[in-house]
Image (cartoon, rainbow, N blue to C red; front, side, top):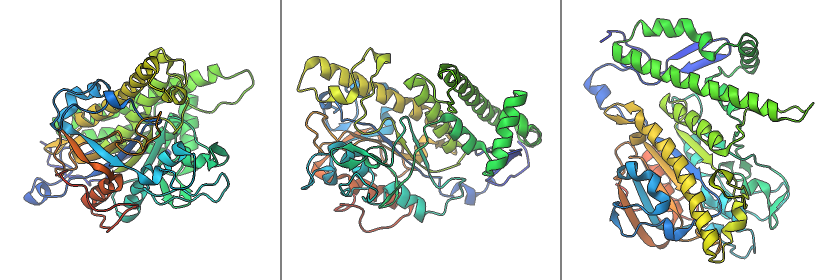
Length: 446
């Protein structure tokens, strides 16, 4: 074992580049004080659109998770690290006198637990979201206060749902009651943001140089990496190699996506994006970057939208050419219900992919997943009924030892989902008496 000790925030630096290094052997002193130091607790939210096929979502019994229903089966290997939460509701996603517009209210109320003001103009208003409340109150030693990602571009103007602004349907993160936080959907932009030094001109110069010389971002930090490797023990060297290899593998996929996007563009068109043509490839590339951001402690708070609310995306990779929103109005048609449950399962496969990544990153005597609270779900239960109670909600991760997992917990009907958010905020150290329409803390999580 090396005798070297390093600062917790170690970066490999080069032109326009600052690659944060995850916790490595030697980064903290081997002392009782270090062993008792608080674990880095992370908070994440993953949003799905259009509700679910409830019959194939809800476990058959309460208590210990044994056999999972069809939609949740991809989580079988991780069922001891998740909780399924039944009975939660979002009253502020209901009309409450505002008429139609359940999809816009579902997305905008999901993390705010507040009623959006019905407008298609610039005077949007809903409430601060739980992720941003935490980001603003916590003084964390991370490069980013929060990270907002998604797979479909959003709009901040226009009428997207029965008189509600498009901002409501495409945003779940709100910095203030009138300011949605734009999500990033382009993997190339996310990569440059995560591993850039924050100096826009240098980042652009770095990107241009790498493109011109066909170099990797790792080439720019080679000297720093070699110096750090020489100061680590074998275990630390192996972990650093794995981490840098992951960055390079993602970089290659971003480059391929950018090349493919350019080839797909019409003659003479400018398409400066690196978005893969296949939805599944796009999803996993973005999820890999979220996982690396958590592993390297670049952020401890993130949101991820698998699609905008009301999305009518077809899932041709599943043999489904109908739009998702269209078939969510299934009217109990067996064929449509089958398609919905397969889309729901596909979304869960994306979650499982992320959770397995997080669980593979060792951290202290556990894993990054053990030190995470990730909430997956939406504010519509059944897309046909547009109901906002008995929501499909799943929570993953052990919350740095504060959450008991492996259970199906059923709460009283119409228990506010905001009660869950209050309980999560407590665990992060953000102490507030109420959030949105909360009525108290959610019981039985610990």
